[in-house]
Amino acid sequence: MEQKKLIVSAVQMSSKIGDTEANIKKVEELIKRDITKTDIIVLPEVWTCGWSPEHFRDTAEKMQESTTINFLSSIAKQYNCWIIGGSFITNDNGHYFNTCPVINRLGKLICTYSKNHLYSYYGCREGEFVERGASPVLVDIEGVKTGLTICYDIRFPELYRAYRISGADLFINCAAWGLKKPVPWECMTRSRAVENQTFMVALTQSGYIENGEWNIGHSRIIDYKGETITEIKDQKEGAMQTVLDFVPMYDFREKCTCIKDIKPNYEVQCI
Image (cartoon, rainbow, N blue to C red; front, side):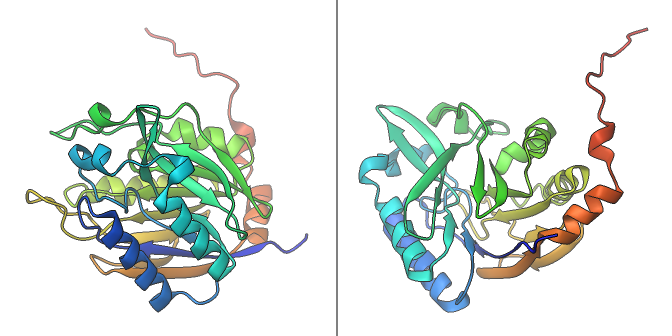
């Protein structure tokens, strides 16, 4: 079987609320400090503005004149790598979205994914300030089909199963996950990897948000059997990096063919 490996780097950081310029500077510094050679750099959800839906529209950008896209493009070219740009808030003719951009080694914007599920519980009002995206996006990164998700999307296994059936080898979940929900973060990121036999980058912000709220930190890269390959514990800012080798994953899938055992439908008998 042909070798297929990718070096993946993921940056955990604490964003300054509503200050895109300061957050771009921080990302640039963290990448310069912690990353030399890589194939992919992943950033967390809303790293440009921090997790504060009330500030989302204040920092929204139009794609055709986006400071964020221009910055990520320059990083991609400088480091000769792909960028999965976490997410930032986009304004499409008055329609606002929580959007993840994907940029190739040449600095070209290949695609975007807008968050399909919006978190609007326990006083959080994301759905009041942005609209949900139209569909999932599976992007081919040098032969590795990569399923894009953002934060709250992790609670919907149907999304990840759809990616897996469509050929996904790698899942990305870019998040700004709250400190008060450690068990769901730990369990669901691992579960999505295990049940689909697929690598998972589970990257979240760290640090203080506002109004007494904190991000959880503890970002991890998880293998297709649910084992943590590398992690950034607690609130530390910086990059984690690993080499993903996909050949053993394909071999494992051939030996444990649970995806083939999925029934065409699960009609429930209510008695």
